[in-house]
Length: 574
Figure 1: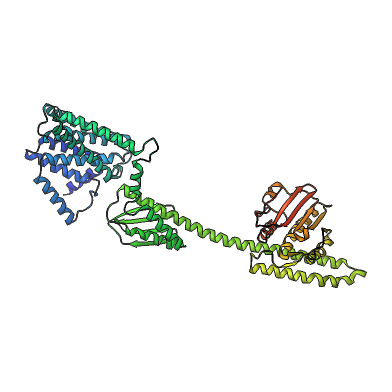
Figure 2: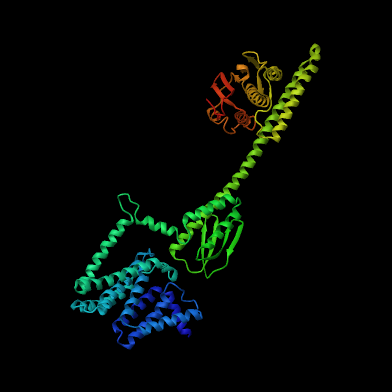
């Protein structure tokens, strides 16, 4: 028993040698013929070798009682019906399996090896077995028989001379697809039955009938190949076949529709995967599965006899199936799994975007408040400077100045706190343009800033929070520029009754790189965070205003805040 097991294990590991031995034993069985007893013995040996070579069940697997009983019943039926027709079906069956395996082999020598095996089996069917079952093969039957008897061993002898691949064993052999094998078997059956039909209908010999059938089949295959992918622009039969593959068991469109519905109902990536993959249980082959995606794990259904693993993007899925999946079904399930994985990645990105949006809102609110507090401190600094400069006879002006400015500073502080409660509060409450203009002049005239307006502002109203934010940012930037460039003149002008506010200076222009993104994103700054004008422009757009750089040349750098009839996108104008 141990010797038999070792011999069987050696044959299983040497798949190519096993196939050569299988064909050699089959050749002896065919030469013996069904009329002799030892012909059946050769065939039974060939069946045993086939059980070691076959690609459906691993040779090392132990058969259960039901499987062994089924195999013995099939073998008994074969012994009972042993004859030329059984040998014909058996040879065509082995040829179909070999032909289905050739399509998956990429190594050239191995491909030739299987083509030689397929050629021998096809020669055995057409030159030996079919002439023995037809009523009158004619004189050509003996010639075909002679060619098979002496030519068949030559094909078998050439097969071991093919060089081996770098890998040896069952994995190096390649899979067998049931659809391709069935297609090859049907071609052989059509060839045999077509030859018999030609002989009966046309009354010709076997060779003429065989050649006629080959010609008709060749023409049909050429026509089918053209219809599969035609030139004039018609989609071809291939599109319908692809549509069939996409709708194996579960329609592709229905699966995509289900994923879309689940994606709309479930926001979290983990629960989405759990619910989406559970839909696969509706397929007739699937018993259950296990999945893992990052830190999320889950399972559905029960374990099956076979398992197939898919690892796509961040998703690792193990499907438990009732039967072993063919390559076509593996491709189909891989496509469905890839759709789920893509949706899962989209869910992960959506969650990341939500976190980024939240952090951005916190950042923008903090940055805006930082600038407002900075401007308030600057106003307090200016007020203290003015109070210190009032000495002697002008000391009495300090108290009225404080009474006018401190309420304004308190009001601006309240506006700043209001922004903390409502980050997108717009331009704030309206205030009389004349009162606002007077307060700004009192804060910045001591700094040497010139103010001018074209007409009376008593009836105009302006959003105080917006105008304070814009004027403080623009004037602070201009004052910092004057520190670097002494002699720069700064001018503030309000035109059209408060509809336009402009700040200009006679200093150097803003660089093109900075001007290009001044109002669309934070920019590099030597004196701060570089986001003051960016937030001021955002606030202006929310209030129906537009902040622009209308002039940017040496000696004339002018920023302008103007009211717009519609909400517009702010941009820099160099």
